[in-house]
Length: 320
Image 1 (tube, rainbow, N blue to C red):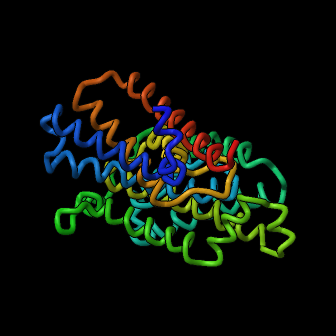
Image 2: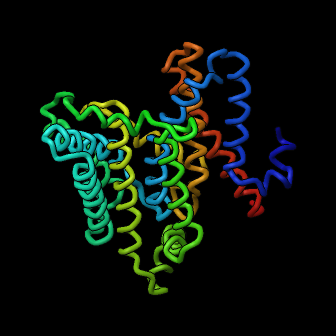
Image 3: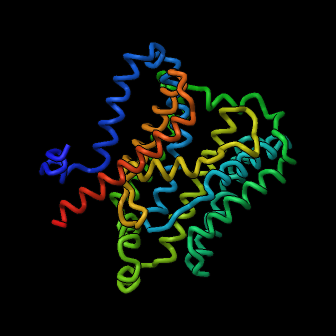
């Protein structure tokens, strides 16, 4: 183990490499010890499951890159899921209901950005408050009850496939490509990383810091809203308790995938890889009938290990 840490190859390997390698090994092990793991139904179920968490993780990644955080995404998904369900149950129609809900979600992101960028409130506090506020609004909007009576065709998208690939997973792929392009091939993407690396230098260079902050939080809340709508499509009902703790899963996926909570680093590939890893662990635990409490322990230890390896790699590269 010591020789591995001192190996020059280890210095150059990105964190995503560890995550992908560990996930592949986990798939191989599960395929050998869990007979139902590689069945078509189980793989499709995993693809649908990871789509929701992956979309939220990509959104949270954008706020982490600018050295922010968004703890409200799970509650935003629940509130907007209840909102779209209420609109549908009142015969607004699917297209109009989805558009109204997406606008509401992006407005939430804009409010977060104003609170952080203009009012100077720490992102942790703003979004922690949002975690409570939007979960409460979900309960108020639904009356604390599950919202049903939705149009029968609301479930068609989530349960549909294209060449045996679930529509939900294809949606994740499209979101990942768009955000990856934004972060990797546009000036705006470079500004996002610059803001997270050194906010003061970014201001002195004349980069529009508030606009960049606004974009990051609007993307985060917008994708959380999209995830909430897709979750309603998958379940055919909306519950104020849905997407519970999804914010922790999203942050964990992004961090395990190589994002730094200090900002300036992180990739879409890493966030999606992290989401796939956690989905695989959860699915494997169910198939092997492992106590879910042990699953939580293992996920926490995995996060700590990946962060340790990343910090060790940075120290080795800097000669410390």
